[in-house]
Length: 298
Ligand code: ADP
Ligand code: MG
Image (cartoon, rainbow, N blue to C red; front, top):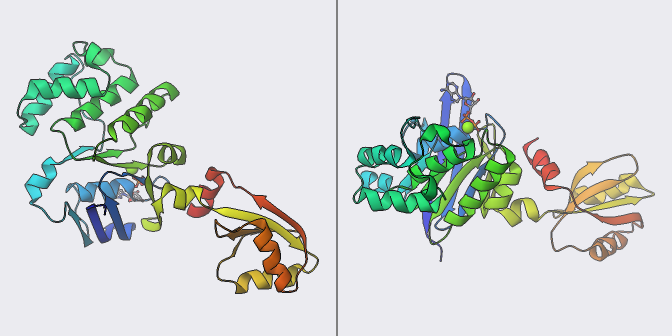
């Protein structure tokens, strides 16, 4: 049903002896807000650089828009990889005019007006860039990426360096522009950001894909129970033999078990009872998303 807009197959990249990307595969569908989540150094910027044609991969391949024409495809992608260099003494409009010339955009004035409105800077269109707050500067950068009405918007760490107010503005903006069938790809090391604005996520660690799926599947869908029994050894053995469960954490006296998200405590109780184990403790446990993320990337 949903169209694949970007297909990435086994990308690898090394910088001298640093393996930045290791056999990365991704599948991004049209209309999704796709988060590339991983700690610093996990290969996010390298991935985006390859996908935008500014870095060459060592192996693997990718295709945008089902292998359309390269130049045509590039026009359908708006990207913000690093903070663009705007001229401090020129107004927002003048700065964007320069971008429309570089990008060779038709109808520049109406485009500029429309993107400035989209990022809520239209009222400040004639103010000099240097008078803008950091959040406004970043919004102007997003406006610049939106010139040419791209189908896909690629943003690398869009809230980096912003204060909480600026962060909130950018997040709201991303949610607002994630309408229609536009696809947004965001790289970030901040779980909270990805969780708030993305529909899908791929988690990277040392250049490797750890997990990929919808936000719900990856960070919202985990389910845990804390259990204990007089015979902890037997309890652990039963858990380890089962395909559906796995030990998340254990102490001397209890085990936190990861279970299927549909699994209820009642089912867990029955399961162990059937194996001849009486649980002395059984309760549902919800890890904070942060803890889960830390666990995933550990
Ligand atoms: P992220 O964006 O997730 O922080 P990067 O893609 O920037 O990660 O970096 C991935 C790895 O590649 C890191 O170990 C980084 O130090 C290394 N790296 C990135 N760019 C270069 C470069 N130009 N030269 C050497 N090493 C690099
Ligand atoms: Mg980066």
